[in-house]
Length: 166
Image (cartoon, rainbow, N blue to C red; front, top):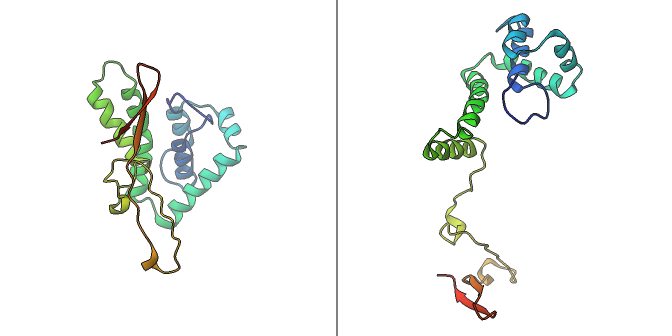
């Protein structure tokens, strides 16, 4: 089984992948799979009644049948395993903050959760909100109004003070 701390299911994608390979006549035997994932036959029978698990196994089987066992599929399975190691390193107090930061950045990148940097951001990547309101019927009628953010802070005397955010 996975050693990740949060589980929505008792099975992992890697288990589903290994079962799919076994069913397609490739990979490990069922006994080897049970040993590696530390599960018994009864647990496997429970997973076999889980519709999500069965769908995941079938999806992997179709990929293996249609594409063969490609490098990309192997790399994806390996990456799933390495996420466990990455998670443990991130939460290990003896690991340096720089290594933890790199692992977190990599995980965010791999998950596709990085903010998109486009040339149309207008704010130069400084954040904020860009609102466009088109009141004309033709593109030439469009007007762009630039506005800067204002920061309002409470002062020592209890009154709000307005500052330019420069």
